Image 1 (cartoon, rainbow, N blue to C red):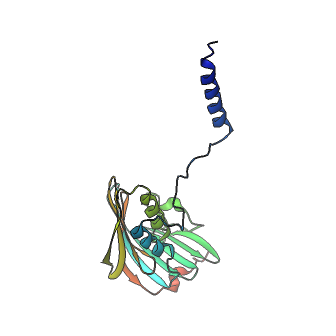
Image 2 (image 1 turned 135 degrees about the vertical axis):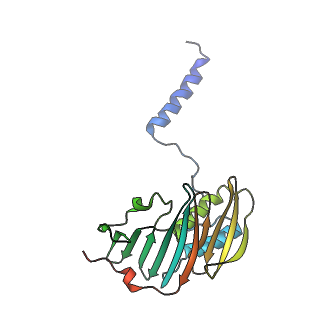
Image 3 (image 1 turned 135 degrees about the horizontal axis):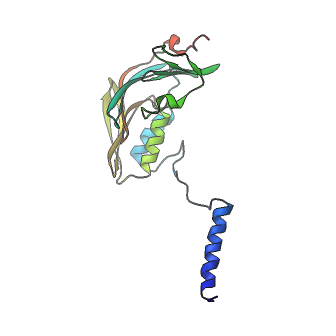
Length: 212
């Protein structure tokens, strides 16, 4: 065998060994984990609100545009203490200290135990769209930002909101949050979520688990 080929073969063997024995060390795919700041003042100002979302009492209504297919659904959030009711389209999630269910808002099908995320997968948002999901999307976009963000105040759903514009390769994503941490606007390449109404109250009936 050609002696000059031996180092090459050794390198190939080393790489194959690494593949077979597990994933090699690498940089984190998410340099901004939940609860962390990004170093961009505008983004971090909005993140701090979203990360500290109110426990309630609070009720908010939204419109949710799924850009793929250009379909709009309504959504709603009711929060009070450790309980919440989140409605997305015709799917309603109720979560309390004693349990959680996924139901049809129009009661056309029986409720299922637990929080079934798949029921709204076609809409493009999750049960946490009103705070935690918005923060996750903003941290993801912070990794791909092309220029320092810009902030501005807007009135959305008759409420004052702090907004940040994030310049990305595909355009500008906009994130807005109320002082209580609820998302007021989330407009990125996938969805456009906009607050339509807000009230500092919570209907107890929306936070009760359906009778079995």
